[in-house]
Image (tube, rainbow, N blue to C red):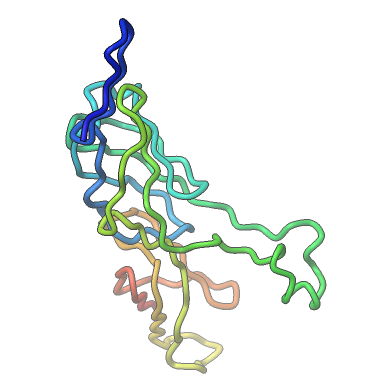
Length: 185
């Protein structure tokens, strides 16, 4: 609903003017990767300079925006331990946990000419990077094993053009690469 003051200087709150984020593409981008994100919705304004986007503490560099689309580059997060977190006992110290507080993050969008956007559930970004299993669990020192690593947050050639994978200091050549699996020799 609308609210306005009948004084000489009026300001109107209008729900229909509120920016709304409906969807984020890709819907998953590990905190360990840098890539472009497309946010679709409405009421994003006409000027790119009026738009700012972040996912948690990760800022997104705006490439372009219009009334219904924002394209921005989300930079990888360097998750490094804090100086005081090097002891085994620190494993149980919540201030030493080296990961985002929440892996599922909605965008925070500010359009300076309109205000803060309402982010729908479908605009949540999954930023996990997890390894669930590696098969086989053993292989020859001379190489030749085909290794499959399964998990989430690995990216894919559609998201980033680079994948570097190594086992015990030896670089491998990938033969399959998706967001949930990497196969290499």
